[in-house]
Length: 305
Length: 254
Image (cartoon, rainbow over all chains, first blue to last red; front, side):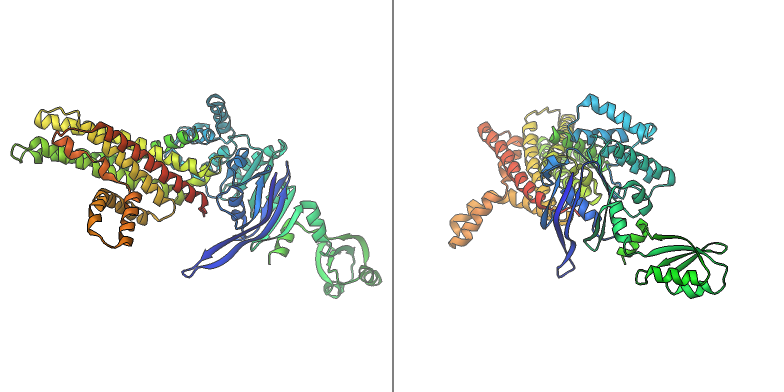
């Protein structure tokens, strides 16, 4: 479980140091087994939050815990796997040596470590590059070895910083499969991303951060339902009358679905019954009336303006 | 266990670094050069060669301790490889101690090679096999272990250039720190004297570990003193690394 309470972080910038607040009292909880998507634009504070969780940065206020252990205690990272945003590893080591080094830092027994290394190299498709120095690895291969090192300790908590960035479609699929596999194992996954479609398909929970403030957080369906409450109503209707398109366009957006079939996404400030009466009296036939549900992308764009 | 793992990886990094081989090649080149130069000295070949050889070992030891030491830590921070290591269940103190022992191991291997080179050159040019030179080389090695601790202490919070300058300053000052006590009787200002006294205890006393002239001139050695000097170098390095770990622990890794 991951718990952040009122995390605040400042940086000093400029020749005459000026305090800039990067995180402004971020509070969130990720429960065991949750897949949490941490979303936000560049510079919003996603990587800073992750670095605080790993004790690479010190928060100026607040507290952070992993599995009930304060992040300043190295033991909090015993069951954590971390994939950094930029895959920067020791280029003088081979893939196998690198995993061996990472596993040793978790105090994994030599014999079981060798077995685990073989298994992981196969899983990430690098078994043929096991004895190649990392300096000869491509960006995609580095991302794969990065994932292998993040899984070396069979982590209960996976922290992935932009795990899908810079990968080709094949690489993206492989990484997504690994995340789904970890999710099915019941592990907790905390990942930051720009790619909303992936987040929507993978996550149970989301948090949207902008300018250091967590502006939306919670169960993905609950958040989307809550935010959709003010997103308007969709009325699908048929009509063969010309001119009705323009007349009702002032109440919201009209999309032509088929010949003579339209969808009016109506803004909330208008009364549904009034509009329905107007449509019926204009000769339209009402096919359906639904509350419009935001997609994650629409929610994100609505929140980050 | 963790410190050993990091130390071994650090050693591996230095061994696979081309700079180290360049340094070793230069050291060997200079040793041979010193053999040739010593031939011009009148009946002093052995002494000139020993003096020259020990100086070369000191200079190249400094290069390894300062430049590779500071460079390695800077590379970890600059290339962000440190994120992968510190995201594992290890403390920053363990990381720093691991780096230290890795560098000390690198020094030990290099000093062994350089000592073997010096003994061979001395034997080749003069026919003399002087094993006591190894004691002098050993004491230079302990000087360098302090210097590695000093360079890592500065490298955890200062830029590489500043760290190099400060470390070299400490090395120079440390070679003259014994002279501070000799200045004392001539100083009347009590404040200035107190500052000098503090400096004497803070700056490492490298002259304690310098027995080059005694070895070269075959003077008797006080072995008890030598053992205490080694204990001093270990204690000094340990204290510095404890302070370095405390500072490193507070550092934000951006």
